[in-house]
Length: 333
Image 1 (cartoon, rainbow, N blue to C red):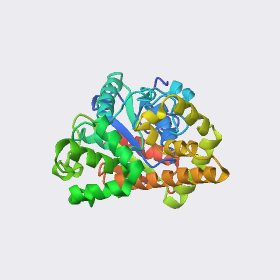
Image 2 (image 1 turned 180 degrees about the vertical axis):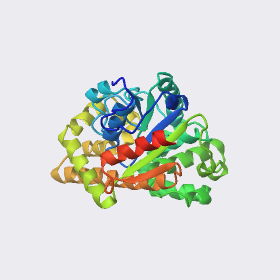
Image 3 (image 1 turned 120 degrees about the vertical axis):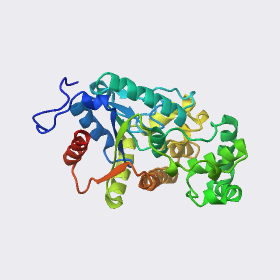
């Protein structure tokens, strides 16, 4: 780690002092999968004496490395990373735990005179960090398991129809294939007896005043992003993704309702349950890529509603220009 906070040869006009840490400024880097968030955050961390906090709901699990594009051990040696490899598959992890741990980590990083850089594409986690945990009840494993079984038996569209029957107002606001929101909505309804629309709308919340969040959403246009996503899927398969999931399956991956539904892992487990013919393989790869593209679409949709985020088109601005923009913003106001 550099002793100076900024590389003066590359960025001679920038001067950063400890006063910024005292003002509790935090950089947040979001964006769809395959946009280079990790590389960008590493560059910023080197320049700013930063430490990276992962806002990824799956990177918390040990062994889920290739499929989550987890930073390498070398990268984690170069720059401190937090909230990675903190859970075994037998452990449960949720957004409330993330919120508590992320806040604690931000405070600790700032107390060391370093800069917290929160990085990830899990919109719900990042929203919770900015505005606080959801007002609904905590998850009940037995109810969640039953809902997951219903999805496997009847399909996600059937459960979405149940949401609309119980709470048509909320049903209009979510996608009929958004597994997380459909399951969570039914869970809240069954636990509380109330409609989801009875709880405070996340758009009406105010951001936390404890920190000064500088939020960025980096992206490529979809015609560029989708081929990058498909290429990343191919790279994961070439890096040994199948072998990784086989090992995790032996360790109990299917018993973790959250981890086993992660993109790539869920499709791979379905492949294991097939005859593993050439047609099954081709179907798995197609489903893996399709799910990854759909996830990117949902990320665009989610962050369009997040008013704190400034969007940067990576097709217009190169990575060095993006670093310049984020650094200038960080010290400029």
